[in-house]
Image (cartoon, rainbow, N blue to C red; front, side, top):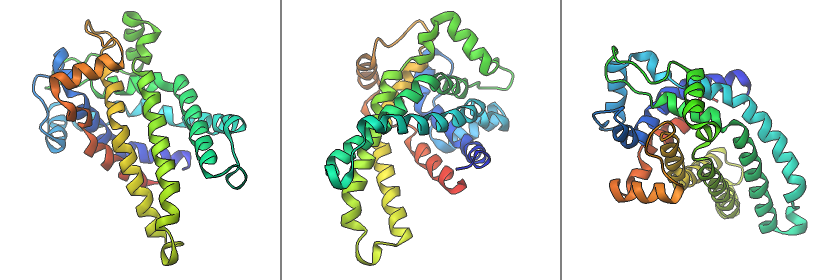
Length: 274
């Protein structure tokens, strides 16, 4: 995707992304008192943001997301080529499974390395997007992107910008492993005969696998973002195991999937705008 198209896609999907983040993290927001009433769903969250914060607030946090895109693409491309020199296998010579493992390993290593450099921007985007107010006269916690960095570094130091990072890497690896593993297994079984060169069949298979892989990895996204929101707060999760234990025991297992419908819709929107 070209740079201008990427900005359009991300900006177009930003309102859905913000609502998804609000739904996904509302229990943490209620816990710390930045939200007094839970959102009842996607429509309710959209309506409340419009009424309580104004239309422009639907794009809150989008600046950090757009800034993050360009170096992410460049780093992923550079690092994947670098790691392929270590993990790369030839599909015909070394076999399908070694090739698949090498592809997942190089992609995950590239993603992890890129994330280590740019995770702080995703943190800032999450903090801005979840900085909700319940009337337009209320004061926000953060005035903007730089204010997130200033306040987080003051209270938590550099580790505060990387809270939830290890969980993020697990999620990246799981997603890539499932996507490439299932796609490589299903493609020769499904895309055969008249479907072999069929664009719609290929698209449907890719969409189904993307949706399934995203759903499996989604709880890790919830965990890392919930951990992000504890920076600057008295209560902090000690680690990912502590986070999942606390969240599931008090809110139930399915809270880890809250906001997923918004995530799926946002992914489709980005795809349509490409």
